[in-house]
View 1: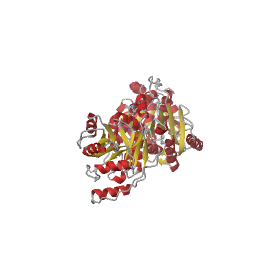
View 2: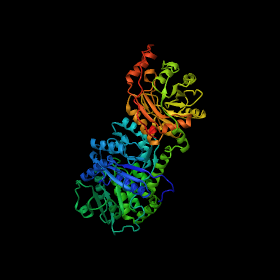
View 3: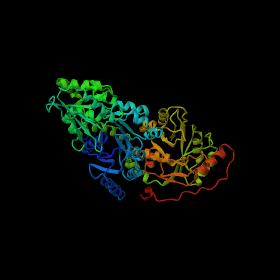
View 4: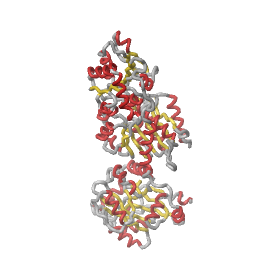
Length: 638
């Protein structure tokens, strides 16, 4: 499929938690979709743990080369192994040794990407580490997560917080979407996986003369025992043989009777590929009780014209259309499984009817369709990013302006939690060398209007208000003239700011110690946000500021900073160094190319002063606060 003319090409990291050598359904998805995306011009980096020392060493060298300036995306699809895997649960392995997490963190620090696409990002895994350290737009695909797997997540509250960093969520099946959204609420887009042989189909009833019943022993051991008991019940006169593919490194305890030894073939994974078995078999059995389902096997069976006989669990029922495209039996019901196999062996026409019924569904199992659906998700999310360019005429006009230091967040005694008089604030701003300030009292605009009236050219005053929304945190309106009432929804508050031609500025986002809009609320109004405060001097944990900076960078939103000062001593402790501006349009254009300069004022000291002034009625002796050392910025160099 050709990409649309003029469509943006992306740099994408696909991260799987499973060792790349394992023939896992998630790895197959990553491999096929990456190849399709690369064929459309995108650059794809596959990030995976590995059991191969050679691949791990090669991955280490690639990260070192990246630190030296090389670009690892030097091919349409590139594999980067980030470390060795460790066993996590029976039937699969998830990796998170310390070196894996550190390599992923280092990789995403060095590599500029548009998207990080993580798969099954449950902790601990390479995918969860990638989600934690991603600096790009982040999408997660949830494949066939099971109730048991989700219910054993001891750190589910932490995982839920981690999932709040997701910009897009994909579920491979409706069943998966319902299950995951129950534990981790959110909007999940449904993208059905593809199958390797979607264009092929089996036309003969039994192409080998006898019916081959296939079984892939990657399911839980109890399912294999159930399958063997069902085979023992099949009538002697029926013409069949069973091929069982055994995973590498396993030796199942299967005591076979003399009759079964003539009919059952145990094949190691090195003897036959999964795809080959599905093409040779006429019937495939998936007998999982729900612990380790393999829906991808059922889809591939349908794609090759093989008839599935599956346990009645939601994932398998969805694959076979609740019995329209295959036969069902209750989990652990040996008698019904044997009877369903007997029906297919005795009635080849039944196989043909089921194959014909599956034909329309089979045509949808195309990896090109999967890549198209995923690419559509990418483009929808990327459409919310801001343009990276500034109007040339506006840029030339700003280039002639002087550089000023600006503090975009502060309070006066018009706020209920601040005792700083307006005149003292203006005098202090002039003393510490600020060229402009934004006065943003809590749910009040009178302090900012008074400051603008009293400024007399000493400092430029941006009239603002920090408004408490109903249940979605606080938002600042800049360049406004009328007070906006508290208690409106976030969307309503933004509309009120817009009515006044103001700028929507989000303060201290992600700071759990402030009233803040969460990630989902920000995404719901992402197109209305003009600027984000990526550094607040009063934020207790640097991780909150880092999260804000990461969010702003993802969506290319202009980044601001402020002291959030409630006492004079905190004013200017962080400042934005930018070109002088006149009005909202010039302000945003100048802010896009600004530099944030941080001082060393202690948060504990400033908070203690705030308490003394607002609660104890004590006015501490004022100390001069030196201006941070000037540095040549990219603006000055121009």
